[in-house]
Image 1 (spheres, rainbow, N blue to C red):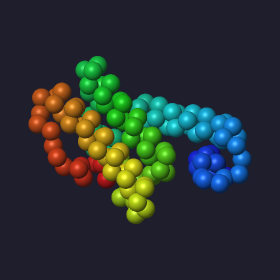
Image 2 (image 1 turned 120 degrees about the horizontal axis):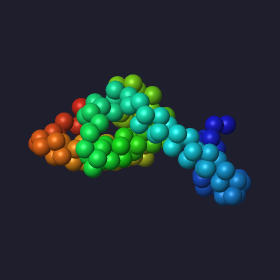
Image 3 (image 1 turned 30 degrees about the horizontal axis):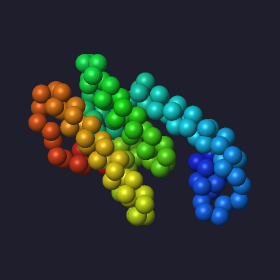
Image 4 (image 1 turned 90 degrees about the vertical axis):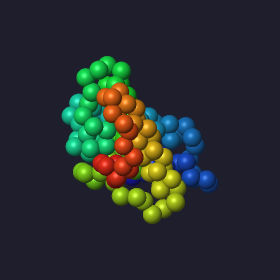
Length: 132
């Protein structure tokens, strides 16, 4: 069973096993998630630039961009998004996943707006631009 599935199974009500048994799986999952984010920052995928614009040179704006890119990568990792064009993939059908998808998109939109202001431009309200 994959690590994500082990953690999710351990967190279900009535699941067999103890929280301590889920601990190593959670740690492994967090480590894999962090590594995926590091790889994405080292070599950003086109969907990151489509969603957030080019990585800024200015240190403060760069930190905003990197935080937003890390959040996108965490979402993609947790929800197994493999869409090469859209940062968050297609809108999920399941209600809880759809809520997480919408919240993640709103967070990316807020970061994109902040970056746009840093660049001296008016924030765009186009949710579909690269966010998917």
